[in-house]
Length: 582
Image 1 (tube, rainbow, N blue to C red):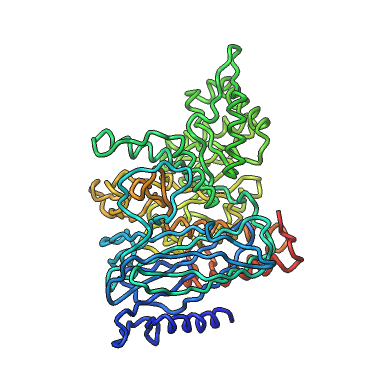
Image 2: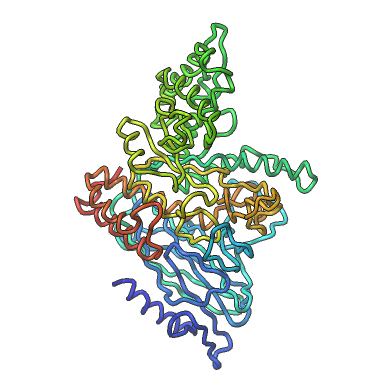
């Protein structure tokens, strides 16, 4: 009902502002009596709007979120003639008892567009265009190290004629925010005096997201990727490396936690040190520092170094291996936080030699009875009978989206083992593939399917910032380019959901539209986990199955996912107000 009312309300504002829309919201119809006509509209759905896209309808924004959640919307602009100095001006959202969600807590970004002329491998729906992805912040992080000579700024923005460009508004609902409706009016202005008012209404639901997400994530360290990226460029004489890496570590960690993704502590955070008696020990000051990091950045999982850094053969050096893991167990006890500790034993073991490696190492480690789990990026079914199986060698199985089999996963889960999942390139049957030129919804869908199968973790390679194949991630979209290897296709955005922030005026990284969609998916997963905890899993599963029966079949309409999310919230609120609060 509100969506229909919002469209009518938005149309009224559009008429008052002198905006012009086609009857179907798609065909531009310039008004010959209005030389300053321009188009401003909004979008709440998880959908990317390309530069060539014609204007849509609807100006009023209707959002809903629980406490501890971030919710965003897009403001799109297009004009027949250039518009100078476009700005977005946020406003306080005022709710029950005069409580406010302050304007200065909203994050504003301009969407930076990449010209993609070569589609990602197997993308049959690709069309060449300018694709928005990187997000240029209107306000730089408070503690970030500023740099001179930024190439891109968010605002003011000079809108070219006959091009669609967008802004993203990210609103955070802090803990303890009173439930109810909050309203305010955002403003789009231009240097020539034009103004458009955007009514914004946010409903705060009376429950809380858990402070720490229940979904484990393993996406690596963007700060480590930055070290590598700038190290290469400095060595080649292209640009100097940053000097204040501590500030970059902190900025990267903060950005990840704001998107409910596990941050990685700086190098050397926890290091077992050998003792004269042959034992190992992690120093108390490292344990204290790790506790502070976990508490500040809401970490729920941590990957320890591979044990091969200490022993070369896990069987022949079993005593040393046991002593090393004993140090980790002692540290875990002292850390006393609900953090899953694991070691990443092998990536995609696809040969008999790989299988023998996992069998030897994994079974030796598990035999120790350590609290540290063994993760292997492999499906929980035998790849080649001649190689034997990996049972007894793995605690956490991590198959590709496309290689997941419900029966084999359920068998391992019944034995107390855990299933994670991941995506890479375009392998196997079509699943929600993570590339810039695929629909933005692809980044939100996987967490719903994962919860349905009680998959508890999501892994992605590249540390969200794989820039090895490009000179400039801000202008070159093909982050994984196999043409140089003579192996064929490109993969736009593969391994990279972040961009180096030096281009926008500070040291660190900035997010993308794809990262925002993934964050929304992780928040959705937490909704589903709340329902599971409330004993309403069967009702939640029904909603999920209507959208995504499997990894290979899902609803492509972003509006359907927004409707489903609201249904989840309604289920959470049914027992009694605040019943799901943490």
